[in-house]
Image 1 (cartoon, rainbow, N blue to C red):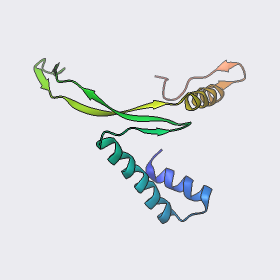
Image 2 (cartoon, rainbow, N blue to C red):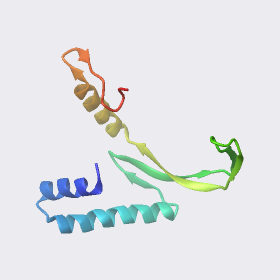
Image 3 (cartoon, one colour):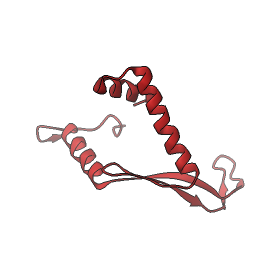
Length: 111
């Protein structure tokens, strides 16, 4: 799902124009990005928590050449889904991947 898909779904569900919805969605994402960049965490009840996590400096290896590469300390965003979101996803995925009593493979997991 892309940002445009989100805008379309929200606009359809609320009756707000796509232009106004896009402004709101952009503002929401910008607010979240700014908060995370400032070191704040974002907790959305029933959805999950966004935080930043410090990754220490370390030595890594270039898999193609085998050369050692020094990686600096850096911060990465993380997301922990709420129990409710995990349950919703689990229930829906089980429902969509089971036909009758025969499990089916998801297009993402089949190779």
